[in-house]
Length: 477
Ligand SMILES: NC(=O)c1ccc[n+]([C@@H]2O[C@H](COP(=O)([O-])OP(=O)(O)OC[C@H]3O[C@@H](n4cnc5c(N)ncnc54)[C@H](O)[C@@H]3O)[C@@H](O)[C@H]2O)c1
Image (cartoon, rainbow, N blue to C red; front, side, top):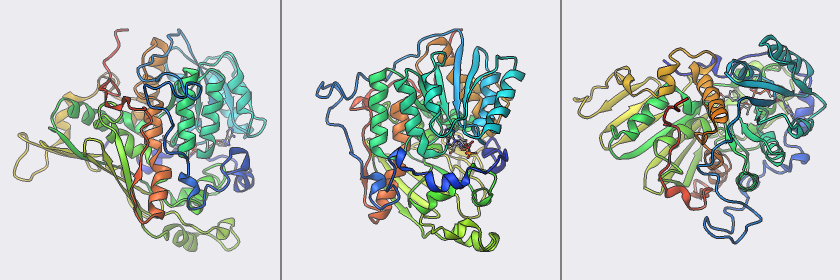
């Protein structure tokens, strides 16, 4: 199977944990404006929508023209700055260094030995020694101010993404963050506005959209093999209990601490992005509302009881995050998307990844397909027989290196190709905001006994227009 195993999905790169104390105190620190995020209403208590519609000029100072269809400016070399060199940043750097026409020029992480290790990779790849920024939590602003960077990549704990994306754009850089783009609706709107005002792309580098199965299903859906699309599902179901309690895996307990603050889907993007692409969300359809339900929060406390010694700092924590969240999202065309999140109970890894229409159904984990007229008599068909529908990226890079079954490579290859050739990126700030919105909205819905929450139209009305996305044509060059 193509999909990431738990091991390679969160590559283990044990690092020092001396900042854990800092994180305990500061993960939702006042400097980030996140104080109170854990209160019932605060996570989603942001403005739902801007005053101005897509074609009005009512608030010209607040946002600019749309970023839909805006190409990068072409460049011979893509100069990258990386913020956060933990498990994710410390492995993604290998892929940036492996790409044609890409230079890694600056690195930032307050943990000096992580930066030193990453800097050694840059010189080993034959590139000049990168500039390094290790002077505390806000040194990333100095990296963003450099004049020799085209693209900033942020792979830090979630509550930093907003501030980093904002600072990068304000300093004239295109930016891509890990998931989620931001944690609150007002922050998502601010990044949409800022992307439009600064004319810089603000992306969420959703690697799961580049999975082989996901890209094949996308192309089959667009070719009409599923008929009219009706429903889909995506998830982040990954038993992270051991890693979240491991004192050295993450840089401090930041990820576990979110389980003491929120109750909703903490990580919607991996499941939502691919299904949103199948359904042309923001390219002909849009997601309009979400209703979420959550189970009791028992998994982490049970794990702690079994595995953590008395006196471990985790014993001071009270977990509120639902072990399993299940959300239903409805689109403007009436389709239904189911999202699930569960990182705190035992189970094999799954992103569910399913799509159904009037002609049949695909389900992943394990992959299987049932399409008329190919299959009949209630018997699943072999998805491997549909390899001719593979995306050109997967046809050209049959055995990609890197993590997560190659989808990380595809993401970085395609991103840097678009940056080099001056192409429109496969997804944009509207997609990043849409994929991240279930995080605050599911929390709000769960606390309101499943009451539907309106999902903002971040495109300001432009969602109904068909346009290219992930199923790109192969560029001529
Ligand atoms: N797309 C994927 O498949 C995937 C896989 C793993 C992790 N992630 C995401 O990547 C991000 C990082 O996760 P991780 O597992 O690498 O966590 P981690 O704890 O291993 O690494 C985070 C790094 O960020 C650094 N950092 C913290 N605050 C910083 C600041 N203010 N400035 C600069 N650096 C700072 C930390 O020192 C640490 O080295 C998260 O958003 C996570 O969800 C994505």
